Amino acid sequence: MFSGSIPALITPFRGGKVDESAFRRLIDWQIESGSSALVPCGTTGEASTISNAEHHRVVEICVEQAAGRVPVIAGCGSNDTQNALLHMQFSKKAGAAAALCVAPYYNRPSQRGLIAHFSHLASNCDLPIVLYNVPARTVTDIAPETVCELAQKFPDRIVAIKDASEDLSRVADHRMGIGHSFCQLSGNDELALPFNAAGGAGCISVTANVAPKLCAEFQKACAGNDLVRARELNDRLYPLHYAMFEDASPAPVKYALSRVHDWLTDEVRLPLCSASAEARAAVDAALEHAGIR
Image (cartoon, rainbow, N blue to C red; front, side, top):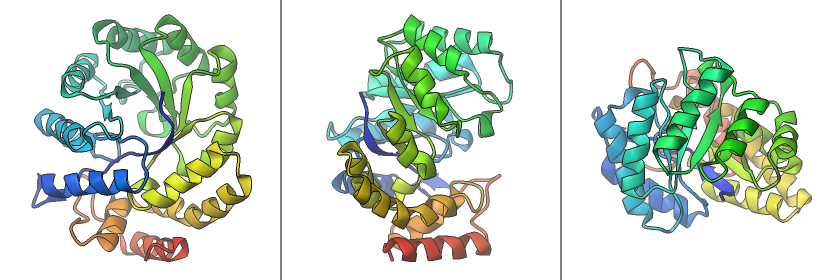
């Protein structure tokens, strides 16, 4: 279904508005650098602080600019089931290949509520769903048993998971409960190496925003069972993985991109602030370590 290095794209801003020109350039650079798919409007894309109109425009631009070169997995998550469905229906019409749907946040549904939420989405839109489990942000954990039940109930609709639970045993849990064909993507760059070794197919990555070529080469080495090369690349990227979260994300990655490309700013939307001096120093050191600057 999906594999390799898949950047969770930033949404570039300039003067408080989405910078469409910069976003198109970012998409081209990502594809030319070997990214295997694109994710607009995820957490790193500041989906929580863009309007629905902006959200849909960002998805539309991404699909247009990708132009079939790589699939687009549109961020469609919401803590409101009907709004998530609205995003899915728009993304389907726009030409996205799948929807990335995070567990509803803030309202903390039970496992029964999660099953009802994702079942409603799968039953009312035929866009394939990539589940997104990130308990550190949502305060809601999609338990392995729930993932398995949903994938078995909707085998043609619920096709993958972005797993940012930080629990590597879940890769085996999902393989045993669903089967080896279920696509598992790491949601944590720093865990991508052991995640892939356990049976993962790639990573929906923050770091790939700023180091797309290295991340693509790393994933290629993992897929080819070239552990020596994968470790070498992982060592180069490892400080950068952590630097991306030295301050509230995506402030550090936007700062990093502003250091690499003069056509990107480090602008974020409130309540986020630009990266702190400490975070900037960590990013600069990590970029140097990776050989990017």
